[in-house]
Image (cartoon, rainbow, N blue to C red; front, side, top):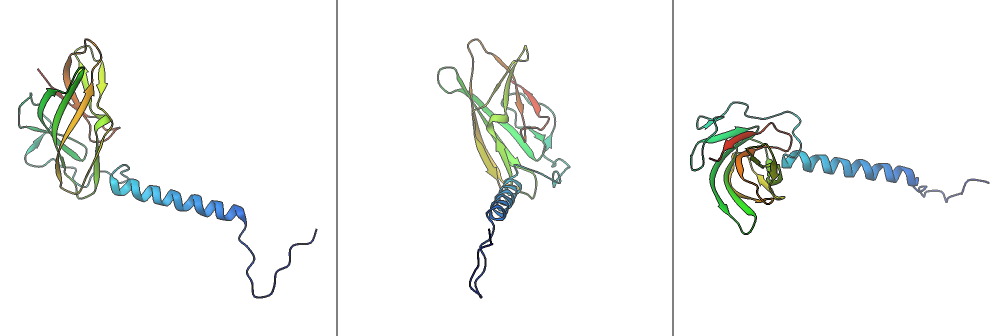
Length: 167
């Protein structure tokens, strides 16, 4: 079968496979740009590796104004209160310590019982601009009989986290 002929001066159509590859590459680039700018992916680590003068890695008790740090975020426990049957609301003040955009993931936060069982927070995302501070309330749905002993705070889903005693 002979290849199709085209009139002189007209371009031949782009092969379908090439269009597909170009589309996939463009979508991948858009995703990577979004992930980097929102802090979902950090390639080079924190911009500010040193804790600020008002932060510490000590574990405060409820009502303390002492902040804890994990990764790019400084977090301060403000209050814990019931949020309906079987629910607990934890209010935090979260500060982005860097000069980059980052996000605070509510589902990465965890209440831990004395026997090391954990309950993650409800899904939520709070974007933080460089050096921005926000008050965030994380809601936890507790199983029957669950008694929280500590709050485990994370700057990112895979960060080591910092435990804050609740008693």
